[in-house]
Length: 83
Image (cartoon, rainbow, N blue to C red; front, side, top):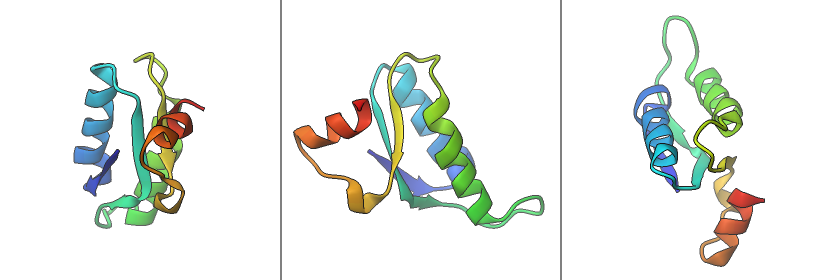
């Protein structure tokens, strides 16, 4: 499960690196953020990361962005990521 600051840098890199190492990735969709930029608000950036990272299929592992209220630990987390 991934959360953190700098959605478009640190969080994005962590998602991609974990997937590249073969891990199924669960991004807590409401538990990462960034600050407003000149070209985009923090909300837009966060929504963009949530919408686009799950569509990355080149690593061959699932990537999911799920609201933290819907995340359950244990076997359930694997089912949410893998469908």
